[in-house]
Structures are given as C-alpha cells and as structure tokens.
Image (tube, rainbow, N blue to C red):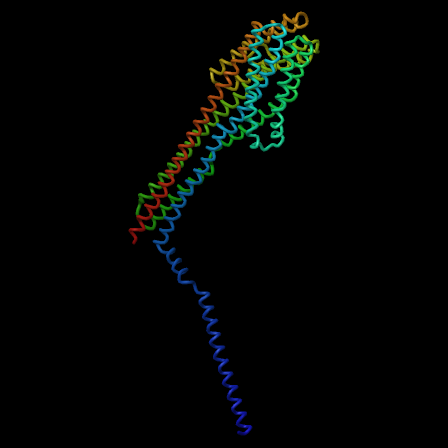
Length: 482
C-alpha cells in the first residue's frame, strides 16, 4: 500500500467521525429543545384543573366547599370562644371565687380571734364564767376557721404568680401557731392570777396586728383583684365571633346573588335556609352574650362589690371592738392605753364616719355598703347593724371613764348589756348579709354559665345546619347541571 492510499483512508475515517459527532450533537440539541418545550408547557393535570375551575361545575363545587368549611369553622371558633368564657365563670365559682372567699374568711376569722381572745381574757380576770366560756368558744371556732381558710390558700399557692405572696403563705402557718401559743400562755397565767398575763395577751395582740392581719389584708386584696379580672373577662362581648358570623351571612347572600345570575333562578332553597340558620346563629350569639354578660355584671356589681363593702365594714367593727377590749387589758396590767384608744377612734370613724348618726352622709363603711346595694333585705340588715353600732359605740366614753377607776366596772360595760348585745347584733347582721350576698353572687354566676351553655349548644347545631343547607343548595344546582 502506498503512502497516498494510507492518507486517503485516514481522511475518510476522520470525515466519518466528524459525521457521527455531528449527528449526535444534532440529536442532543433536539432532546434539549424537546425538554425545554415540555418544561414550559403546562402539565395535563394543571390544564385540566384550570379548565375545571373555569367551568361552571368546577366553580359550583368550589363554592360548595368554601361555604361548608366557612360554616363549620365559624361555628367552631365561636364555640371555643364561648367555652373559654364558660371556663372563666367556672373559675369564678370555684378557683378564684373560692380563694377570694377563703381570703375573706381568713381575714375575718383572725379579726374575730383577736377580739374574742381579749374578751375571754377580761372575763376570766373578773370571774365572769359564762362570758368566759362564751368568748373562749368563739375564739376556738375563729382559730379553727382561720386555719381551714389558710389551708385552702396554701394548697392553691402554686397558682399565684407572685413569689412574694407564695412565700408569705409559707410563713403564715408558723405565725398563726406562735399567736395561739401566746394566747394560751396568757390564759394560763391569767388562770393563776399572775400579773404577767396581761403582758402576754398584749404580745399576742401585737403579733396579730404586726404580722397576721397585714398578711391577711394583702392576700384578701390580691384575691379580690383576681376575681375582678375574671369578671371583666366574663363580661367581655364576643365582637370577633359576631364579625365572623356576620361575614358568613354576607358570604351566603353573595353566593345566592352569584348563583341567581348564573342560573336565572330567583331562589335557592338550600342557600336561603343556610342564610336563615346563619342569621339565627348571629342572633343566638348576641342574645346569649347579652344574657350571660348581664348575669356576670350583676354578680360583680350586686355581688362582689357589695360583698367587699360589707366585709370591710365587718372587719372594721371587729377591729374596733378588739381595740376596746385591749384598752381594758392594758389598763388592768398598768400598761399604756393611749394607742388602743387612738386605734378605736380611727376605726370608729372609718365604720360610721364623722357625721351625725349612723347612716346618711357620714361617709363611713356602713354608708358605703348601703349605697352599693339596691337589695332591700341587705339594706335592712345594714340599717340594723348601723342602729346597733350607734348604741354600742355610745357606751365607749362610759367604758373609758370606768377603765381609769374600777376595772370590774369597765369590764361590765364592755361585756354586759347593752354594749355587748349591741355589738353582737352588728356582728350577726353584717355576717349574715355577707353570706346572703355570696349566695346571690353564686346564683348569678350559675345563671351566666347556663346561658353560655345554651349558647354553645345552639351555635354548634346552627353551624352544622348552615353547612348542610349550603351543601344541599349548591349540590342541587350542580346535579341539575349534570
């Protein structure tokens, strides 16, 4: 083979390779172009979906789905919101309400214990056996009630967000125990006729007023604030829920207008029924909210506010009575009496005010309690307490004069008639009024909860009916079209 033949064969091979590569390149470019075309072209599923949504059956199916979901979601949101208010009212009847009652009872029981411990001490010192047994029994009862109320608050202290109050609750059982030990020590020395007995009784009173009563007042105010917050929450109007239901009604009306234009039919029975049930849900929610809010407001204004005013007056009366008794304890033991007299004057003015008489424009706590209520029975109890308070307090000057002369005579003024009977009337009248107000408050809360229960059931039923009626109305047109 010559060199020229070899070169010719090499050239032929080269041309063949170039041709093959050219064909491969062309096919590759074609594949790339085809992929690009398919990538930019809508998929068959996407095209079918768009065509379906543009079609009348597709639009009606979408409308059916939207109306059903909207009806159920609005009903669910409204029901959950109402249940939240129900839980708030349940807390008022149980958690926060019971803690407020426990705090008030703790405060009142401590004040009663302070008063009756001093009165029992004086009765023993003057050999008044009947009075001694009476006041010692009342003291033991008051201490038992205070311990029970404190136990309730301690058991629930983890729910308190304030670490200071939690720590305070942790110290109170020990403080109360220290107080009872001092009272028992004073009673023991008094039984033996030891002069140091009055010192221990005054130490017990100081412990009560320096630690226990201020702590009780703080806990009472915190419990009141918590109840007030719950009441405001319970009285709130369901604005968002009503807006959602209103939007649902508007959507149903708009759907009917749209269908009428598409079908030339004036009425769609299913959508009309759905609109009626949605409107009924709107009205039902408004009525339920108004009724529940009214009862919750009554529980706050005629219950909690009046109860707080009565409790304040009751505790002030007990504190004034205690100051009177401690004045005689200190006088009998040759201790200074000035601070107890000053305390009594301040407490008397707080109770009945500085004006003449017991009621009217004097500005005392009894006046405030009567002005806070329009319940004739409660007002009558306050009038009874005020009249008795006038009689009791009018004996104080006689008691003070006797304290500087004959101790037995001063004790007779304090523990005998008419002063002791008058104070007992004040104590009983205010205590029973507080109990009546608490009963009325719980009744109003129960009524509010019942209204919300009916509201929840009604909304749930009406929302389901709205969804079913909407589906039936649109499905009827969809079936006719097919």
